[in-house]
Image 1: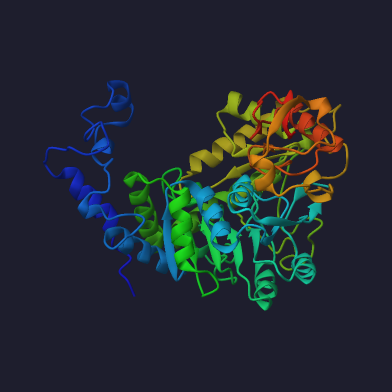
Image 2: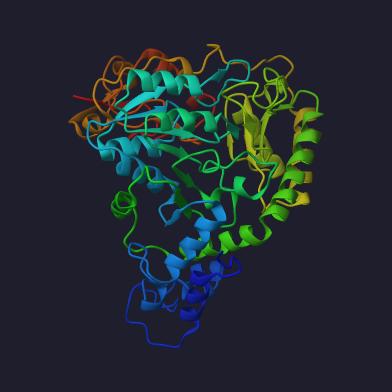
Length: 495
């Protein structure tokens, strides 16, 4: 067993930042001496002394043999992996590398239609052909959950030549599907199960949290350590176990999608976050769960509001009662505000501007909050008070917010892939007014953000319901990302 008290990379960075020397290497600010004063006033000088490059004592991210290797080995043990890679380009590059390492041009990969845009980027880079599965859908709450084991089994029966299965666990709402069953089915075909576990890095550190992806049988998982733990923004990890994935292909893929000038501030923050969780994770997660449960209990008692929970309809069966919803990350709080006659976008804006309560993201009926080890009792008090006042002073009794179509496009819409995402992305394209794009082939990734789930992707036929949906989201206050024209007046289509 390794000594989880150690922080080899952080210690080396600290020592090099404190060492007196004349720097004739990048970065150009030279230990902060060339940093502009306004930036130094904001961040202080110490952070820039530690903003170092790949010096001899600091190892090399792409061929680690020293402190980075040691830090990654400690992380692998802490998170239950056989091997771990540090990521400085976020989980995005990890998902891209996972697809590149398992799929080549023309290879099939099975994945849910509500994947993050990074998976679409992986399809474009690799040339892989997606076999999309519609996730299960709650029409009452208008929330897409996970894909089911039956859906994966059916897809593999129809496409036994698929090279991998990729799934999202948990969803942005904290919903976890039956990953163990999906892993068992996938492994019957002797192909790897890849997991986008960006929002589940904390699962390994408390028994009341959902089962970690690796423990459930995943071959590869990518975690955003910065999203729910104590690393800096953009700092993530990729973990693997077993022998279904070639480590050399992971190494080569990461060289394509990671910066050749990795930030040691990000790398050291991963080392420190791992130590923090390995030593104190259970205590920290117990406090976090206590805060989350306090918020959930108090907010659910406010008239007009409800919270997403696994024992509420239609999940009366509790854990295992539904194959697309077998566990819920209790640190993820989704509040349904439609009972107040408000959209999630409207309520989110009021909470932010009037009560200084800022959510992770809003949707048509809901607002979702991430409660993590960094939150305090004062934060929860402010959150509850904000919702209490919102319900009293901003309720609209004459408006009911519902999904006008009674469906979610990502779970019910039949998408037609005319070209592979790679072919369409690199094809000659033109920008047309929105009204003229129906039945044309999309040439860009279009997704409301957050959560960054594509509604259209390169190669798909654009339909009127999709266009209506995008305009509706925009009218309700949502933000559409990925498109060349951020106003959504035009879309790029294949010529």
